Length: 252
Image 1 (cartoon, one colour):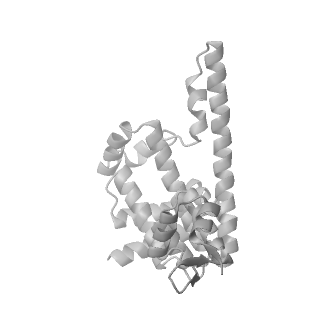
Image 2 (image 1 turned 90 degrees about the vertical axis):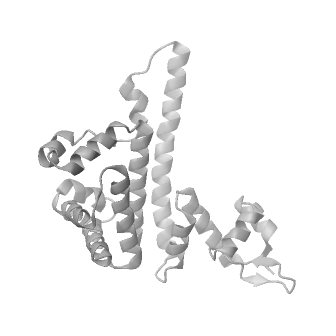
Image 3 (image 1 turned 90 degrees about the horizontal axis):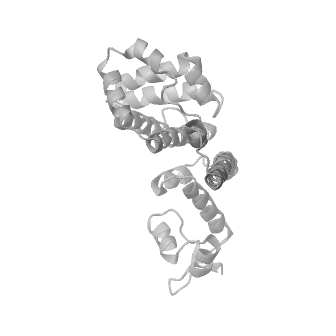
């Protein structure tokens, strides 16, 4: 017999109710059951739970985790390597956060006022104004640009951080799909493309599939955008572009 649901709950620092829920949705089902219906988890079940918990800690939703892990091409080693890269980035960011808290405490104890730039530098390198002039020159007369500007005026630092986090999560998911050998016109890749389109639609301006295809082309043609994606995985910019086109074709 394997481990009981109570023992696994203690090992994974989750509730028994959580494990029952994972079983109910098909995310993690015990490999054995007693004649009385009691759940028993084997070593493979524990490995799967570890994967689920890693993905959950990194901000993936349960439906997304299930989709990734149920794919026939899912490779545990590849997933662990991806999770390590993501956790290293998260650890780096948390380290900067701790340093920033220490600096804020030190400034308060000394009665000093922190410089505005130093106060918020920890929240990442994303600067929404970095390409503002160029964007105005290229698209300033379009309705999409005007609506984007109006929406962006209301965004706080936390809003911009959420935008950055959402974009990074989808980029990493694209990199994972590409790494697992999924074609750009696979359902998972197209679903990611649709999520990417809806992020733009919700955050900035109405983004039709046709407009999205234009953006995908720019991701490959503009070295800055291409470098952004290819830093996640070489060739990813073209993969994202192809997934966007496939998604638009699927939508008709």
